[in-house]
Length: 499
Image (cartoon, rainbow, N blue to C red; front, top):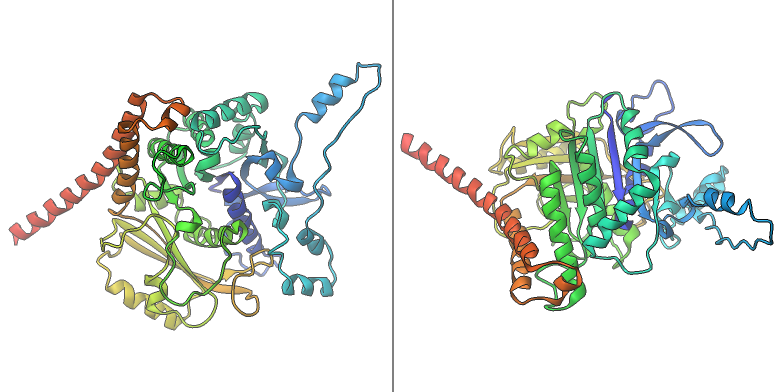
């Protein structure tokens, strides 16, 4: 076995993670003659369902504020409170918060008659989702659920408070010595961590957790999807404290991930995703986290599918090593297309949804991994014709072709017409020189914030020297891309001289 530990932290990450695990559940086979697509042991562990029956549970640690867990929330203080009042002989008034009711989707899942199942297909729970746990189709190990106490203050973009939140949480529940250590010790051949976290609410928390993790697991492979805040450097209002806090917080996250993670995929807030110029193949509502997380999950799940394939040759180390063959460039970009109907065209693969920072300037990637789902022979012909025109060639360009992407009844109803059972999908992850532009925007903003003595820096408790050091680190990352370009130019010139 080559087990992966999955970590999710924050609302958007857990919404996306729920879709991810529902997709993994769809790969389960129940007939001995059926050959499973994926190796379950990589992502799942043996566990128990609520009726104490054996089942498979995600190898997961899910962090979110307690109020966001819905029916999954648990109160670790209950036992302590009960024992503390047991010695009291007087009257006790106990006030308990009303339990979150079962979701409509789960109620429909529990009903096994065909008419109810038909209702679920014809009435997807798009407007009935209150929490990310409302549409989960898997059972979680109790240790997977990590409800972080809600705070009285708004901690969004507050780097220092988020770090302190982790330190206090780790002290209270012994996270690193308890659930984290135990889930790794259960593995026979632990290969690494795949993480997704919201930088705005869990940036400092995740950084402190990863730093603590690296103290014992220095060489463990780690890939992270960093879901950035709603504020970008080129859209921020100058001297508006909330905007500055978010960008400084995101910058600190990126700096920390550069140091602690082998590969990081920065994901823009859904409002900044670059949509295709062609006719849309699906329709989403603005600011609908349930819908946008479904798109993110489908593309991220597909691009990492080679890590979980039964009999596959990829693991986190080789996957990351291919994309990051230039070791100083540990950041990647993610894109993809959801294709519910029709034949695949060149525009479907060339003009995809850009979930990461992108550049209109044409540049050759350093490395790229493409995954196609459900492509027919003609569709693969279109893809092969397209990659023949690409400057990047094998082995720096690697392609995987897999069965179509399954659409569970838990997936948002975003496609025109009736709900498909599966769709064609194209996803791509690459490392590219254009990432330098993305980092230069953050470096410039941070540098200017120091120069104009932005009030947000004082509110966050930072000294000018600390912020200057952050700006310098970001510029060093930008320069590392320039150094690679110079090396490539030099090698090309040398080749011409030899001719």
